[in-house]
Amino acid sequence: MSIYRLKCLNTLLSLLLVGILSIQAQDTTTFVHLTQSLNKALIDQNQDQLNALLHPNLTYGHSNGWIESKEELIQNNKSKYLVYEKISMDSLRIKTYNDVSIVRYDSTIDVNLNGKSINLKLHVCQTWVKSEGSWTLLARQSTKIN
Image (cartoon, rainbow, N blue to C red; front, top):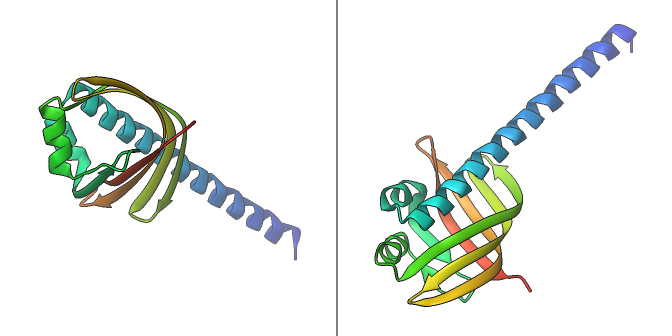
């Protein structure tokens, strides 16, 4: 293979790698923003924002096995049955497959459940789906971290 062809191939591969890294950086930025927006909406009890971020067929699984639908989550948030006081995220990891993204992170969450304060250290797994140009949370499950 000629030097010219090797240089062209090297340039093409470099451009492809830069494009892939750019897409991954964009995914990271998008999902950091989405997860932060969801956490802020839960803390602020912003039902309009929750409605926009949550998929109609949401299953929101808690570390104790409790699963809420979209309607239940919004109602429990609105009625203050479950009050999110603080949510922090660490070690965000994202895998995107076309219009589905899996977001994993470790989290410390301070909540008040029906008048009882609870501090949780959790591993969270979220499934986001893209439809009609918008990402919405389809599923969320958490497990306790010791």
